[in-house]
Image 1 (cartoon, rainbow, N blue to C red):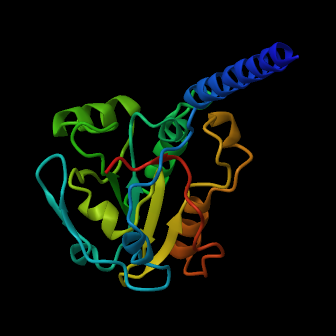
Image 2: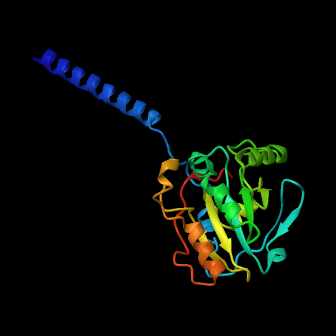
Image 3: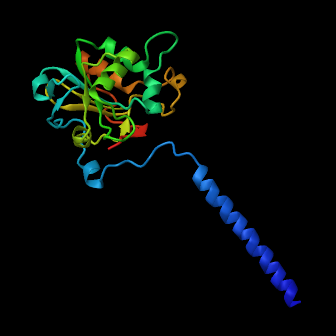
Length: 229
């Protein structure tokens, strides 16, 4: 009788071990679509809100030229957080039906009407980090046409604007007021096929702003890879 009970307990414990091992294995193989955002609660709460003055900044681009918000007073400014290795960034830079990608098309459509700064806030050794030369070469290969590419390797500009994801956008009006902040569009899939049916918030904000009409959707939840601070 005692042997039978011990036998049953042994089998039960063996079964539990198998289950625990299986679950542990499952934890290691489950893919993580997004990593944890590397911003402190204080930084997130201090992020600028739409309708308020945008934080002043001065940053240097890949060619060594300086760009400041004050210098662009009187013009619309677009800040695009970018990571060339992020699948969500690739989604919007992928050529579609033989034409330019979603982002390249916007950069061309609004050229000479807005200042478009692509910001790379990846730290050294992190995904998306590049030298100035590599950043320029990648921009050329993608057929992109921003006004400039900013290497924000210390994460100063990204943290100033509470940038959490790539891609993520901030749109500033000619008076220096933040008018849009958030995602590029309404579909958080990493597939380029989802672009056609999505609402492009960036286009809508720029079209309204340039036309002098209110921006209907001024704040959205960004999606994509976390910024690699």
